[in-house]
Length: 230
Ligand code: DX5
Ligand code: ZN
Image 1 (cartoon, rainbow, N blue to C red):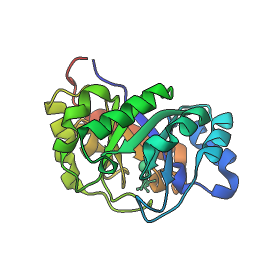
Image 2 (tube, rainbow, N blue to C red):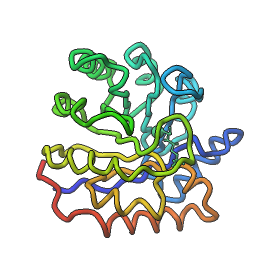
Image 3 (spheres, rainbow, N blue to C red):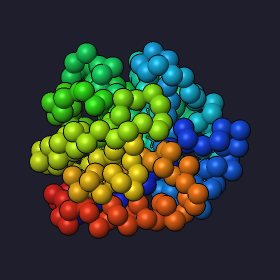
Image 4 (cartoon, rainbow, N blue to C red):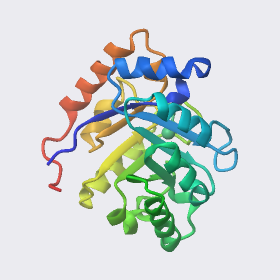
């Protein structure tokens, strides 16, 4: 079975003075999820939003919230983000010293009621760091830029990780984040990604709807016909 392709506009690139309208604009354009970037100024050199904003967004959003935690202590805040309405909650493997620590985070997320647990890895983190825990996550978020800011350039070398995940038989969602646009999306789909975060390329497009449709088409044409069966 092949996972459906999902496009998740990243609200980091929206007009923060008009978040509700911007999310509605993304939904009208065909967004499958809203990608929500949470940064703590420690794990990454930027600060963004926390649980109260996620809760407010959840009240108006009509598609699931894909919450990407770029924070040093993901377990500490799992309950708050789950309560705020995170559908997907993703932590970074770099915040865990070993496999046991990562398993503790995953268990904590599940106990908090998170429906879909994701693990993310930075461009310079080896795939081997997450292989032991693949059996217990629903999604892997492969970073194609160093996290912290939107509008950066895609790093093609991370595509080997996506291929590696599929070669290891991972059938969950593989999501790519950073520099995804009409130039880069096909290569990601070809390598086995089924979920695409797009910030500046969509929120900055003159016509978000047609740009999203164009990218979805490019991805679906490039996607391998048969991903490993679930
Ligand atoms: C970067 C964030 C991304 C960002 C992507 O740290 O994790 O989700 O919003 O933005 P673009 O698509 O502009 O690279
Ligand atoms: Zn992100």
